[in-house]
Image 1: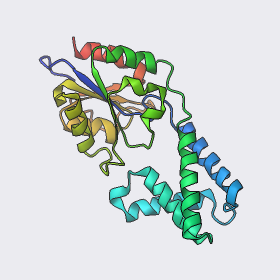
Image 2: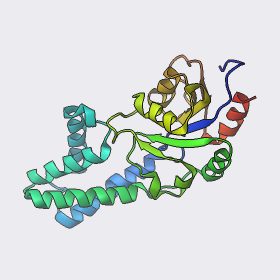
Image 3: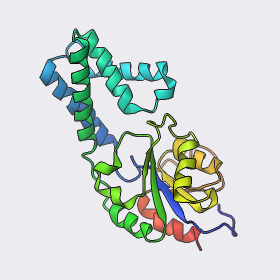
Length: 239
């Protein structure tokens, strides 16, 4: 719930993956196809299947907890070490690990925003300042939605992935807004809704799976099922 005397919103911050587009199929395709491409180039997958690459990435994240959210770094470094173990020298391993991550990122950006996303953001940008905060390695500048936002914070590359408060605070500083006048929109309960609420922000939590909140809903957190419901929520908040 929102207090009756709450100030009007001036700014919105958005998560990206699974908030403005469905991301699971995108990532599954990018993972499979970039690995198959690399196997076609150097024939490594019989000895080092995709599951081994995944295991190494997860292990590397545990070894380097500060880099746990820097997914591009984890991918590149895990691939480099794996290719060294496959018999490639350091120069070859570096070349092919960089090539593989570039192929992955190209595929990762072949995505389709929700049909209403562009028009929705265009409408919101007339009245509010907009920023993006993502834990993923999507580069908003490579997408058609980029022009709607003043900036995008790649929190993992900052070594401060959500739910860390720092990317939220940095976003509000850039937007010139206060927590009470900022609405954060995202699909993760732990990484979007709860940290925003702890800072005193309003939060629109997108219940993608339709299973309801996994715990008590804090003050200032509003449950919606899709980003298309955002205008109606904002109208209620500013009423």
